[in-house]
Length: 181
Image 1 (cartoon, rainbow, N blue to C red):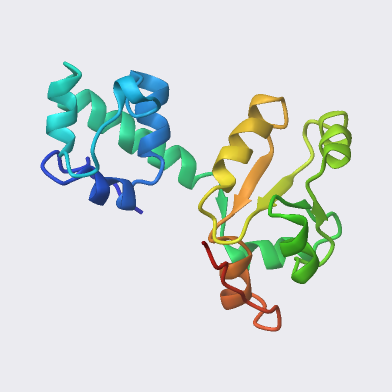
Image 2 (image 1 turned 90 degrees about the vertical axis):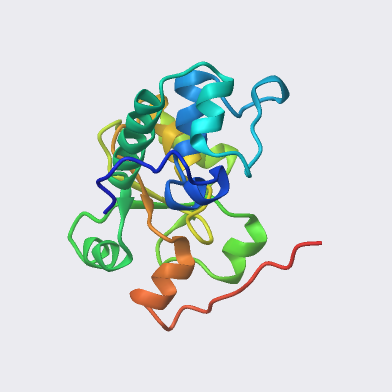
């Protein structure tokens, strides 16, 4: 786990690779990077972005690190999930991928996130443990944030998505790659 402040002289591209939550944190706390008027180049350094927006570098570094640590606490490692799934009261598994991906390969007992599923979840026990998963873990934290913001405070994300689960916890699950145009 990362425990030191991000280097202000690294490019934003490198920083975002090491601290994936930085983009959300920068926008939420400082309104940086979420729209055309506050955008930054991935070639800019963190120090340059702070200078452009008249922000103290240390305050921004601390925000990025805090956000990273908070998001890490929301991730469930694949082997931990495998153990949880064996318990008497396993967590509710919700697949946030497309219907086609879900039909091709899904975690046992999981349900696809649809409007109907979403309605049932938001009307259910707000203390129920819910684990969301996507393909590789790159987008699922946005959905976790939405669920938590709507009262489902025990919502977490599968670290690395179903791909990591297939690699680390259940090699019998088929792995796949999405071809982008």
